[in-house]
Image 1 (tube, rainbow, N blue to C red):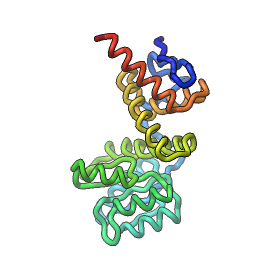
Image 2: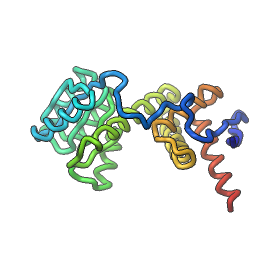
Image 3: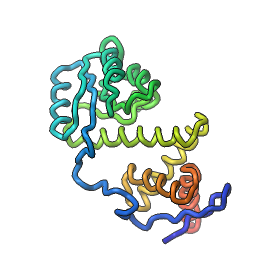
Image 4: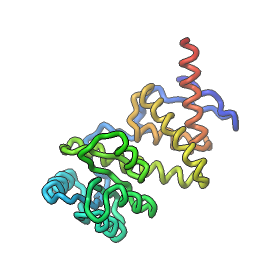
Length: 231
């Protein structure tokens, strides 16, 4: 088992995982079964797509607690129901999905999953900047929906954890960048899923009494040292 180099701030060492272990990381490969009923608000101006999406979600065990045909109604429903997830179409009347996502993100109500018929990079970046945690390109199937939902919820949970750990906004953004890089390393080197990689960082942080920023930096430093040693 390889040791990650000491963090310069405290000189603490982190032991990198050889492979995902059930005791350390929950099994992400099991069939999707929501641990409890996940409450969802759907906003889509096309009624047929909205109905299809609702059926997909309910078949997977989710509970649709609100449906909207425009962005303004979506924000109102999100405020009223405080759901676990809000799914927004990008193009809607009264208030578009990106503007609605901004309002929901500002109030930290719930993670947002964006639906779009376009996959242009600028639109994806606008949605991300607005606070969307993940997006789906239409047309989509049930097999696309569940992973996207899990990604949105997982990223929102990560964001809340970082908010609790880091009060300063600029430092929080820097920490998030480091954590994202460290997750990528753990995914590549140890075959962890993105949520499992975050949980490993979080668990190591608690076990070693280090900040997540320190753990993430240690993982990155270790990966760079290994790369340099290979020449």
